[in-house]
Image (cartoon, rainbow, N blue to C red; front, side):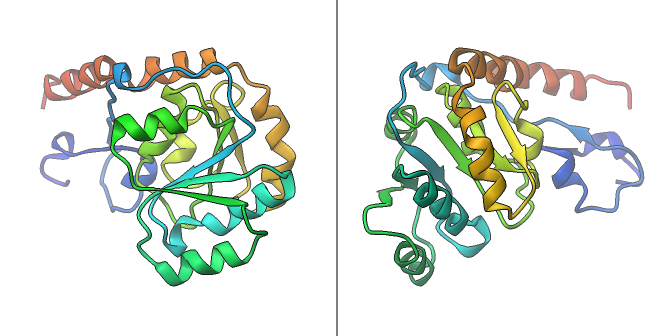
Amino acid sequence: AARFPKRLAFHTAAQAADFDLPAAPQLMANGFDFSQYQFQATPQKLLGWAGRIAPEKGLEDAAQVAQQWGWPLAVWGLKEDHAYAEAVEASVPEGTLQWRGFLNTAQFQAELGHCAVLLNTPKWNEAFGNVVVEAMACGVPVLAYRRGGPAELIDPGISGALVEPDCIKALVEWLPQVLALDRQVCRAKAKERFSLEAFALRLENWLTQPQ
């Protein structure tokens, strides 16, 4: 970093902040093939959550939101911590959580697109947050804690909303506004920022800049 600062790049500023860098970081975000994600204009009365099933991912907060809102929560991801998964399930009424498992991209996006909103509730600083972009690619707006990489991926009022970390009350209060967002605009904004073409342009600009 000291000798070749322009040869290092990071997904997000949140990721770069974990390192003692002598200069402002190069930020690349990530790139997605949007042809693999189908737009879903009409959602079901269903909330979504995706990630490793482990304490640092904060599934318990999303479960509480689903309980208070009265809609089921579809959960995608590997049950890395089975005891934790059982504890979260026991904390809400039976049927609140729908365990969908860990799916490949085609299956995942086909199910994810039916969600009205994706909840993103990490307890730690995520470096990026692929599932956030995957949801927006399907037209699903994201309601997330203002923490880590996901906080840099969401355009408030366009593709979702950001709230105070660890505040379940704030998630519930903001849910109606996120439900009202235009799903087509949500996808379009995500494609503008995170398509393979946008990512390639950022990479090209980085790799060809004077050293």
